[in-house]
Structures are given as structure tokens and as C-alpha cells.
Image (cartoon, rainbow, N blue to C red):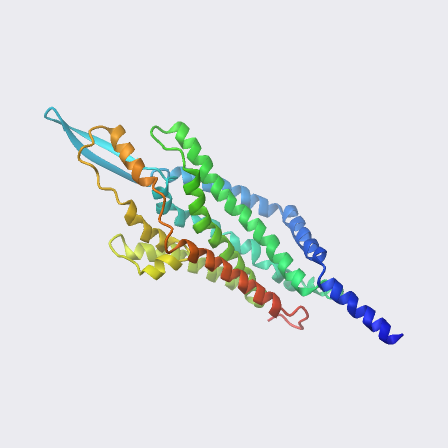
Length: 320
């Protein structure tokens, strides 16, 4: 009878460990926590408002002017690069992405650490919830919310671009395919990467979760803003750096030369000038070299979370 009882208990444990409903229950519980968190929704609302403001402020990141001569008199012509075009986004998207990254670690990093710091993890020790369901459920719920914030960035670009097209003369309508391409190649991998690294490192080192967030934010600002500014316009970064830069700051720096504008001397009107600029700024960016590495970086971060889930010690006497 004892052997039968032990066998039955072992079978129940294995059944629980493989039960996907437990994993879904963790995600649902975490989603409920997000929905009840008013601060998160205020942050999301503030983010979309700020992103719309930035998109509007950077709607013409670069201006061009030239002079033409008509019948012995000179005339000055001016044009601009639209901020929501491919060329415009390469000039502004890495900077705008910093705003999103400032929020991401605070969305996902404390998924598991929060329980350890509040000592509520002790309640989980009394349940049959498997460790993999606990860790991955918390992580994926936070990742979904982070991707929702990334979608707000996409919506702000398309929405404000459409509004500018209706209200600003000669402002082109955003090319949805091009915008989606840059979003998938730059914003999506960055969102997954930052969310995964923040969650993984904070889960492994719960006492250092604040330091983890600060280090991620500082490193991102340096990579996306400080280093590109330090290189300047005349310095060509190494090809491997252009392709593997997770912040896309150097990636955009390396892609921008293909959008260099050499004004055509045959242009005689502002309409021709703006049409000429439009033909260059709306070119599809070259995907060779950088697109796949960015997706691989996101995939690597998912592997890191998998390793952390396997190494996570659900029962610990003290916080590490």
C-alpha cells in the first residue's frame, strides 16, 4: 500500500509539472496585477502622449535649401526630410527608443523579485506550482505588457504621421511597410532584449534589482546617444558594430549614408525639391547585415531567460 501511495503521489507531481494550465494561471494572475496597477496605466498614458509630442517635434529632423536663378534674379528654395519617412526614422528612432527603454525594466524586471522582496514567495512554497510555470508565467506576462508599450510607439509614428500629412503642406503619408520594417528590426528586438535581461538578472540577483535597472538604462543611453554623437558624421563605425548594435544608434549611423542628399541642380521649384527629397527619404532601408543579427540578439535574450528559469532556486533561505 505504501508503494502504491508513493507511486500515485509521484505521478500526480509529474502531472502537475507538465500541466500548462498552471502556467496560464500565473500569466492571468500577473495580468490582473497589471490591470489593477493604476501607476502602470498612468505610465502607458504618459508614454503615448510623450511619444506623440516627440514625433510631432521631430517631424522635420533635417532641412535643405538651395538657390535658383530665374531671369537674372535668384530665388531660395527650401525642403525638409519627413520624420516618419525611412530616412527620417533612421535619424530619430534610436533617440525615441530611449524613452521606451526607460520604462521597460520597471515593467518586467521585478516579476519574480517582487515576491522575494515582499516575502510573498513563502506562500508559493506551499503550493504545487512548478518553478518553470512560475518563472515563465511572470516573465511572459511582463513581456506582453512591454510589447504593448512598443506597439504604442508604432501607433504614435503612424498616427502622428497621418495627422501631419493632413495638416502640414507637402508632408508625405508614412509608408506603413517601411515603418513596420524598422519597428520589427529595431524596436521589437530592443523591447525583448531589455525586458529579458532586466528580468533574468533581477531574478538571479534580487537584492541588486535596482542596480540592474540603472546599469541597463545607463548602458543603453551611452550606446544609443553618447557613442553616436562622439563618432560624428564623418566617422564610419566598424561593420560588426553597425550590424550588432542592440540600441540601433550605430546601426542607424551606418545606414544613413545611403540617404545622403545631393541636391539636383535642375530643380527650379519647391515642389520639385520636395519631390526629389521624398524619392530619397522613402527608400526601403538595406536589410543586409543588421536585420537578422538584431533578431538573434532578441533570441539570445530568450535563451538567457530559459537558463535562469532552470537555475532559479525556488526555495532559498536568504536573498542572494
